[in-house]
Image 1 (cartoon, protein in one colour):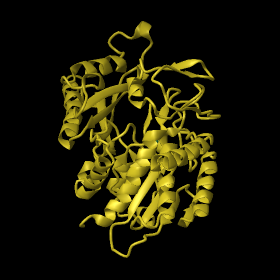
Image 2 (image 1 turned 45 degrees about the vertical axis):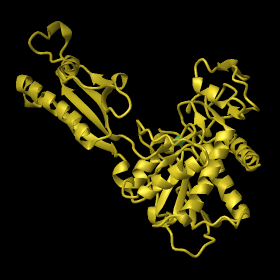
Image 3 (image 1 turned 120 degrees about the horizontal axis):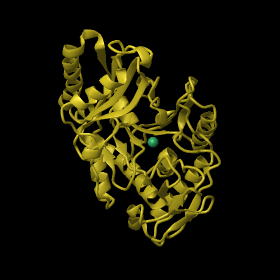
Image 4 (image 1 turned 180 degrees about the vertical axis):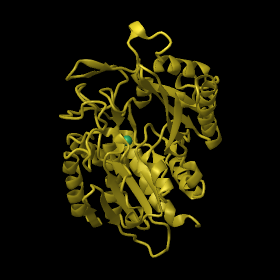
Length: 415
Ligand SMILES: [Zn+2]
């Protein structure tokens, strides 16, 4: 019974939100990066006000926050719930026309707008979703379940708690952010004002995902200085920065790359080269779950440069390494109840928790280091950022149950 109620609540919301164009724009300097994100932010502000949430506020940076007041008097940690309104600029996010498939039969799904086929042959996870209600794109856009499903789940859970005062819960703070997809989701986020002690993002994938470990990430730029001279008269004069760059990459100690690593293994990736014969840059990303391994990759770059400086002189090139983000586990491990509770609630709902670390980052990694420990929970979406994006409404309903269960479990936990 309950499952049906949640399904229709999350589906109605998901369809309403996905049809609002909210693609973020990495080339823009405005906040939010695209004006259309305001359309969804304002709608959410109004919806939360109408629903009966309190302290609803949309600020000038585009953060919309609200409170679900406690219905118990115990002093327990304030729980935050977070999702993002923008969709990825990697694929068209305008004029989204979702397709709803009831009782999915495990066969190919035709995306009506482009005649593309969403097939279990390419995406075998679909076979686990037989008999579910699925929402897909029509092939001309992404769906935007990333992360409008998170918003739909949070607000459906809040609405249910508002209408069911017999379920005990502490104070809950709800926050929706902008520009997550372009890495600016937490810029200017006021953790103090948000006022939660701990939080979860609802921005994950398949059923059971509970993520509290992510990569430590650095970016490195290796620059080589050459000397451009007309090729006809260059003998003994020209220094080709590209040749130096090739030599550098060739001299690096053997190391993991994305194509040779998985699970808990880190990697170093040369992902782009730019410049000219006169001066060029090699851009690397360094990723590891441990800070020691991350530092080792940095050392590889520095040592290799030192070797080349021995041969070509001190001024032949330089290495710069910049921090990108850090593994939230360093922070979250001090709040073991965040993981214990989520895990327990999933198990009570017949869901097997999947604790695999994220081979990337989330807004939660920044938030954790800003003082708000924030693991990530599943929403049911898959194939984000493209035309094959889809989501199971049944899994969204389960995520709603998990959120409600977590709110209740906070009142029962011995802090
Ligand atoms: Zn997302």
